[in-house]
Structures are given as structure tokens and as C-alpha cells.
Length: 114
Ligand SMILES: [Zn+2]
Image (cartoon, rainbow, N blue to C red; front, side, top):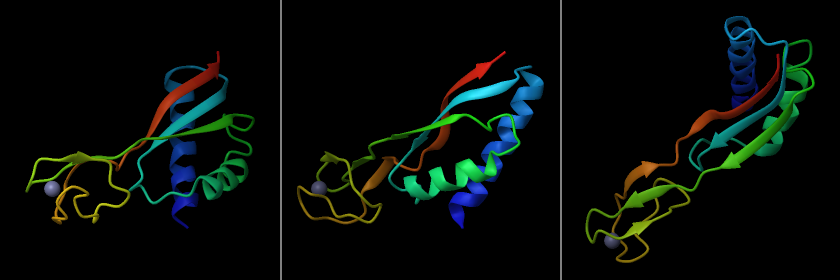
């Protein structure tokens, strides 16, 4: 499962951060996800609880921010927020939108207990 391996790498990142930044525990982890990251928020939350057990983020709260995708049509220059990377241009119907963002999958905010 995609979400499970994501949460496992998140845990490894947080554990490494706890050592290098010298904090005791994570209180809040906020992830920013793009619509093309193919992640299900519910599956993520489910994996988060089990994967973080026994780690520095054991009692952390998971927050999820969705980022809106941005793309530009190469044919007419229209700017839009497609739902998938293969959407046609909503203005002229051309395919092949130039995707500028939407793949995000990052830790955008972290609150820790020193
Ligand atoms: Zn267009």
C-alpha cells in the first residue's frame, strides 16, 4: 500500500529530525499533498496511527492540507486547476496541459516538544 510506505518514510524522517534537532516528541505534523500525489487522506490517517506507535510521533496529530494544482494550456494560454494530469483545457479542449504543480507531498509544518 502506497500510504503505508509513505508513513514509514515519514516516521524515519521524524526520527532522524528528533536526533538532529534534538526534540523529544512531535505534536503536530502537517502534510501538504497535491491532487496528483495519489494519496487517500483516510488511508493515510489509518496508517499514521499504527506506524507512529512507539516513535517520536506516537501521539502526534496529523493534519493534511490539499494543494490546488496549477496548469497552463499550451494552445490558448488558459490557466486552470485540473483534477488529473490528463485533463483537457477547460477553455479550448486541447490536451497536454503544462502542469506546474500538483505532485506535492511534503511536510509543511511541524510542532515539537523540546
Ligand atoms: Zn486551452
